[in-house]
Image 1 (spheres, one colour):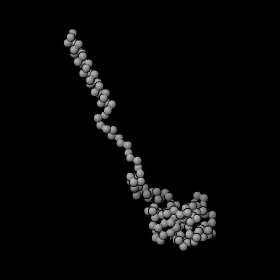
Image 2: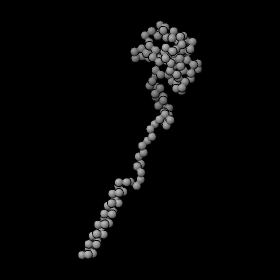
Image 3: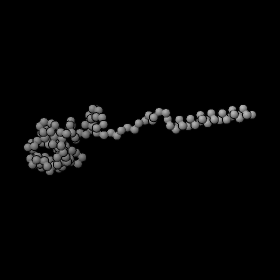
Image 4: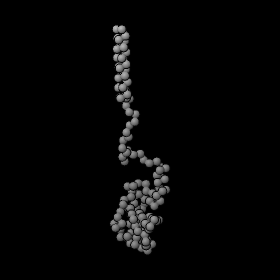
Length: 136
């Protein structure tokens, strides 16, 4: 009987020890979590858009002219345009059209003002040099 009791205690002790080891290993995995949280995307870490996406965006937005470098295009208030350009905006050819945006573009030669007009759902963009002459 004594041997049976010792065998039962030894068996129980072994079982409890093994069970505790299995529980601990399931609570704390041996390997770190393989899923990492990605770092936030900023303008410094963002990858440039593929050329196909850029071409697709340009095809969708037909009202906006293609400008290679955003630094070459500076926004200008309509009221700050040169007097010669403002005079042209008031002519009969733009009757019913409202100027919505204006940019001073230096990337294209010659440097010019690019003005977008809106009339209902329609829009158009025209280019003028600083002297008020329309460019094609």
